[in-house]
Every structure is written in structure tokens, then in C-alpha cells.
Image (tube, rainbow, N blue to C red; front, side):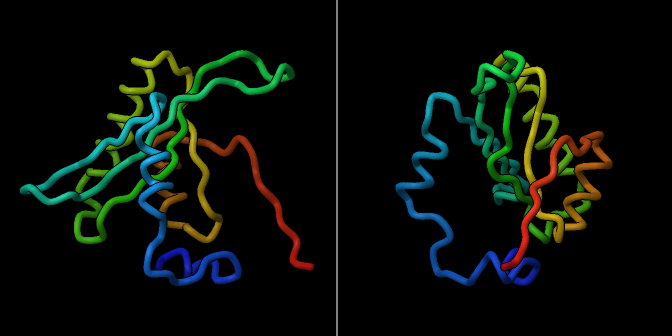
Length: 132
């Protein structure tokens, strides 16, 4: 619902955000990891990480990790869980031979942008749109 409010021209409210089949395809692949943070037996945050390689001949050959999805429960924000999840992603990415950790974020999500900047991430590309 956060994205529905932040970017209503792109997102809408739905009962099921992702089908079980799509979720299974995302997390069950050989190149995927799911990292979960727990607090007192409760899931407080998660990251879905995929391990990728440069896909085109024009790109420098490299391995990188891409955070497909990331979140910390509102009740557990500002407790360091996000930082620990990112640290776990970095560790796992390095184990898989990655040289960078990457993700994308909607411009409207200022809180996430501030977080990603605070942990040392930087913008490498922008995706532009025009309403027509």
C-alpha cells in the first residue's frame, strides 16, 4: 500500500501482490537467496537476492548481486535490521563472486533513498518516464 500511495499512476491495491507461482520462481532459482531477519520469532525484515552476470557483449564481464525485493516491518524500523540485512546481502554476494550489490528504488520512496545513501550506495542509472 505504500507504493500505491506514493506512485498511484503505477501501483494499485490488490489482495495478492504476487502469485505463489511468481514468488516461487523468484526465490527458488539456483541464483536466488532469501535472507530473513527475525526478532523474537517474528519476521522483521527480508531481502530477496539474485545473482547475475553482465548480459550483453557491450558490458564489461562481471558478476553482481541484485536485490529483487527488500523490506523491514514498520514496527522494526530504525532498529538496525535494514543495515544487518544489507550486510548479509553483501556477504552472500561476495561468496558468490559478485563485485557489486545493486537495486532499484522509486523516486517517491524518499525514506528508502535516504537509507540506501546512508549505507554507501550511489546512483548509477536513472529510469525516466513521460506521461502521454
